Amino acid sequence: MHKSKNLERFLAKVFRKIPGVIDVYENGFGWGTDYGADLIITMSSSLGNLEFENKIIVQVKSFEGTHYGLEAVDQVKMGIHQYEGTAGMIITTAKKSEKLENKVLEVSDEIGVPIDLLASDDVTKFVIKYAPELLFKL
Image 1 (cartoon, rainbow, N blue to C red):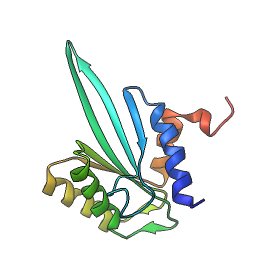
Image 2: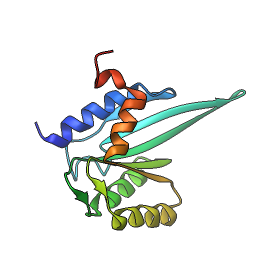
Image 3: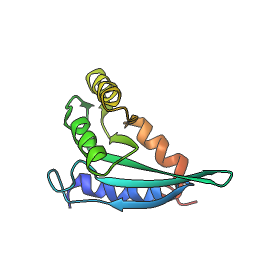
Image 4: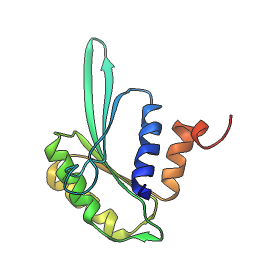
């Protein structure tokens, strides 16, 4: 199985452990079939009697070294439009480049939807925070 697909499945398990997440949809089988959304996360929150749902479009990349390519940003943008996302997230195992960070900010401003970038050690911290039992026998 492709390394990215394994990472997507692993991250789906992590997202399912996060409080407020009500659905994690593992979407598509690759570029062109998933419309830029590897995972579609639905979160629910409430304030008094008001109930809110947010749909986060996640694009996952399994790379080594530094992530210079910008295709993930275009993919998550496409996913946000296709699935009416209220936020986007790019998760890469590589280190983030300034070029990638700038493109994320530019596209987020352009479409008026927040996009987050988790890279390298931040991915590890994310997993340890929400699902340490997936990494360690507790």
